Image 1 (spheres, rainbow, N blue to C red):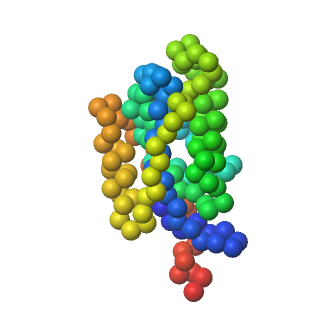
Image 2 (image 1 turned 90 degrees about the vertical axis):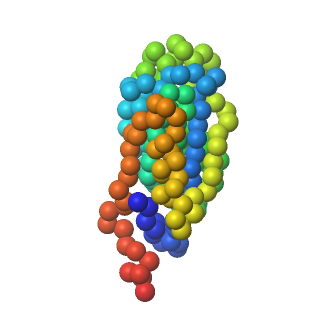
Length: 154
C-alpha cells in the first residue's frame, strides 16, 4: 500500500495509473520481458524516487500504478519510465528488437489517470490485476518501510 512521501518541504501522496502499449501493439511482452521491466523499475525507484506500487503485463501493454513526488510532472514520469525500460528491454531481449523495427519498444501514446487517496487505490490495483486474459502480476509493493507518517510531525 502507498504511504505519504516525506521530503524536506512537503508531504505528498500522489498516485497515477499508467498504461503503455507496445509499438504497433505487437505481442512482445514475454516472461523474459516481464523480468526486465520489473528489474528496471526497481532501479528507477532507487534513482528517481518513483515508487511502483503495482506492475502488470498483458502481452501488448503494461499497467503501472506509480506513486510520485510533486517535483515530477506526468510527462517527466512517462519519459523516465518509457525511455529507461525501452532501452533495457531492447538491449537485453534481442528477439523483441527483431519484432519491433525503428528502435522503439513503446507506442508514443499512453493512458494516465490520477488515483484518489480515499478508496480508489484498491479499485485501480484490482482493475490492473484483472486486465486481459493473459494478465501477469509482476510486482506489488507492500509499502515504504521506515517512512514517518504525517502524525509523527504533529
